[in-house]
Image (tube, rainbow, N blue to C red; front, side, top):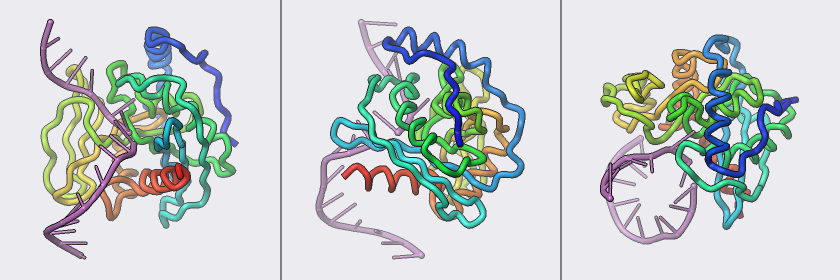
Length: 220
DNA sequence: GCGACAG
DNA sequence: ATCTTGTCGC
């Protein structure tokens, strides 16, 4: 069972949210690499009418089959503000995670981890509150990067304010790269290895794809 | 003031 | 995120 740690009150203003991120960012751990990754959870949020639909799927990394899942609908309690993403999407995602019967070895989030203005993106937030290893896989870059080689597995550093905060990783030859960054209790090397294992056929990892399908199916 | 800005 | 036709490719 996944325990959700009560590390902060829920903010009602942007200033409070920023202060919470600044306070929690130092608690992110970049050590502890999940070497025994057997299962990985995909997290995604769909929008149906005026509601959020949080979907989580747990996949067996070896077979990429779905072994568990959960869907939770909720009302957005925070506006969409770049940099404060977690305060909008994390609540229903945490509820969905707490409904799982299988505890995944790592969380694969749809968004950024350390590739964030205050180095505390959604993946860091969810990893810290669950104390589970986590990584962020974004479809668009938060930072600057040079195009990686065209071959699958090629990558280049993703930079933000002169810091390397992640990587632009090519998961399919000739296809736009995804943007991988560490969330919590994981290394960047391990994160990229995992993403490549989870994306043998398509641009996005299967974790994200299965969660996305589940969420939009539940949204109607 | 102007442009940037995860989903 | 979501609104959407046709089209290219396996």
